[in-house]
Image (cartoon, rainbow, N blue to C red; front, side, top):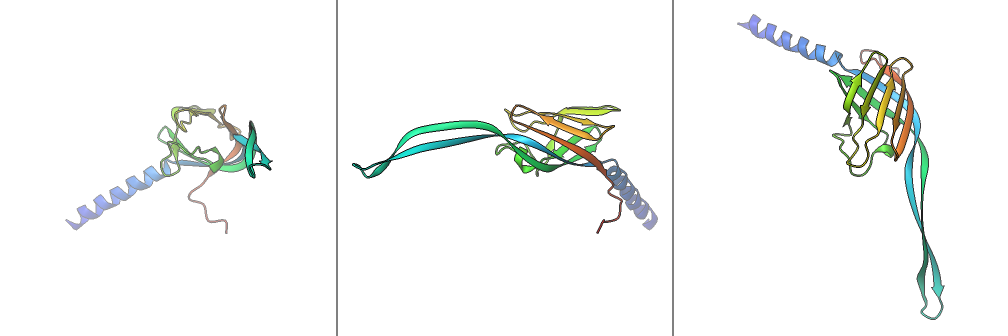
Length: 158
C-alpha cells in the first residue's frame, strides 16, 4: 500500500514539474508613449468682488514618453502580459496585474495577438521570434522593446 501511495505522489510531482517547464517567460525592456491630456484654466482677480473668476479653459492632448519593462508568459498556446504601469488604464481587464491576450497566433517566426485592456483600448501586439523585438500599438499608446528569454532553472545573478 505504501508503495502505491508513494508512486502516485511521485507521478503527481512529475506532472506538475512537466507543466511548469512548458511555460516560456520573456522579459522585454523598452520605451513607448502614452496619450496624455492636460487642462489649464486661466483665472483673473476681480478687485470689486475680491474673488477670482474663470476666464479661459484650454485642453491639450499630447504623447508622453516613458521607459519600462514588460513580462510575458507563453504556455499551451496562450499568452499573458504584465505591462508597465504607464500602459495600464484605470479601468482594465487585468487579473493580478496580468492581461491574457486574445486572437493569439503563434508561428515559427512571430507571435501576434490583441491585448484587450478595456472596452475602448485593444492594442495589437507582435513579437518577432527571430530578433526578439516586441511592438504594441494603438491610438492611445505604443511600446517597443527587446525581449530576452528567462531561464527559470538558472542560478541567481547575485
